[in-house]
Length: 201
Image 1 (spheres, rainbow, N blue to C red):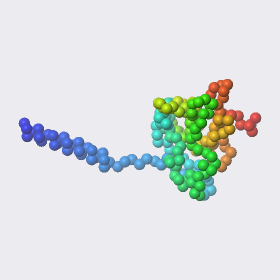
Image 2: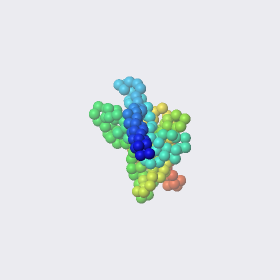
Image 3: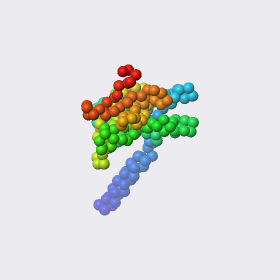
Image 4: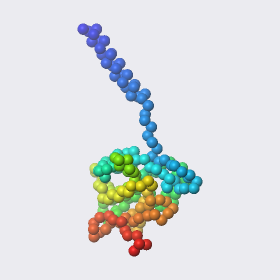
């Protein structure tokens, strides 16, 4: 009985050890790059050619499906996710020079609560991708509260933000262009809304 018991225990440990070694040496699946470029960067700006590939299932602790039920992935734009040679083309930070950012903080609704506005890329469970803008109440405890969501299906997902006048948020779909919209708190309606284009008025 004792001999049998001694024989079985090493066998169990051997199986467990083999399983662990198998997991450790199994090749890791390569994740696709967050940004891929197809086209000539010498003649077309990188943010026009860029295709973004979301890889996270939450944004600042908020599950993608809580932002929009159709989303399976959503990734906030961050400088550390984008190749330096794109952001610092020519050695200078073009976004910083234009006073643009992927996330800005402020009290955009005029209250004491601090908000963060951010941009990113989403992917629906059907595979369609696009750009999103979120405004979140920042909380010292628990996950942030969603105050505003704007999502647009598009093949050109790049987006950037800027602080505008009177607590407004300027949303850009490109750099070095005039394709922007202004988002502002409406006191009467008590919600964030897009400002009318002065050219169209």
